[in-house]
Image 1 (cartoon, rainbow, N blue to C red):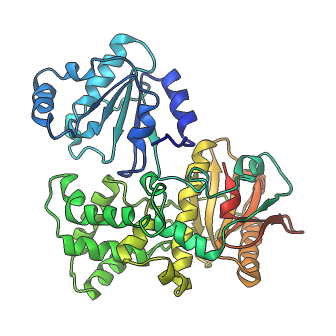
Image 2: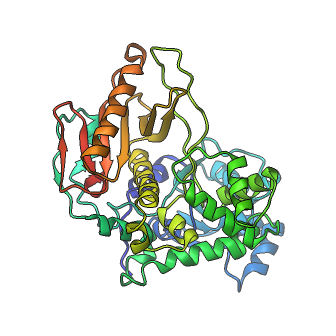
Image 3: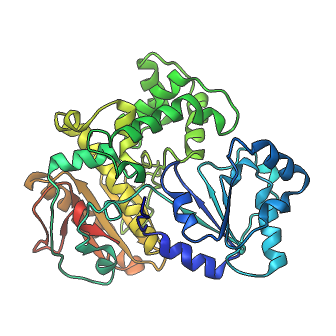
Length: 422
């Protein structure tokens, strides 16, 4: 299968020129190893069942032997042997050369006591996501986020995705292996992913046996709470209502395990300087790393979403969160949400490390919802103390439908997600 270029490829290339090693971590099947292989000259699959005993002995008795090979050397699923981290850091110091190792992992190490050094200055980190609509070829890429931060006053683009297509993209997700499948088969990888999480991955990550029925119920609850700031107590009550009673402590343990294997990725709250003393809510917003995980957890498909626009709106927001995170990453930035004690919300705040920021609302589309989103953006802009933070670089409403990307007379950009890129 021909390699599909990823937006993070430029980052990988840069870090191998400037750091001794690079860690690529993210959800299983998102393409970490495939991308890493494009930059490596030797590799070792540490989860190879035929050689696991051999690798375990080497990790205990002669760990540096696992590091021998042409560089950059790819160490796939390195977290299975956490002592590799310090070994890589030490070897980087001894060799005093850049681009020595690429580490890939679909989970964080369960036992941090075996890691003595942070790796700062030697090992760069890259969070990899499933494919954006740009990478899968489903976005025209006519609207560039970088251009908006550079001061573009108008946007133009033609949207080729209708609402039915958007529901298909949500249920298919950004799994690279799904792209080669026929439409009806393309939804299977997400279902298989959820089944793997429920039946094995959530327990394998740290060796703690977890209840598959509770895990499945928790994933369904999380799917119903996408884009919200639902509390642990509310999620626990939701799972109890589905027949799976668990304490808040247990729910927290399960959620931590899901974070360790990159199933969920909550969005932190944005904390701007405001003109007033309005209290800012700091609870994170709940998201899966890919919208298809929510669809798979709920066992729903495109036609189900077409009949339930409320659920469609929540899962569409998850799709936008995934894509914006990757596009912001390319610009050295992060994505946050905003909510204050007066009830004013902003779905996505893209904040770059140079201080620039943009505000974005997510709406399925239609005049009423777009006007609602525009009013929120303008109200939030007025509350921000621009003498301390500067004006936002742009105000944008991301939509699922709409024939064109365009800029309103008030300067707000209306951008179908299938026209956006980094």
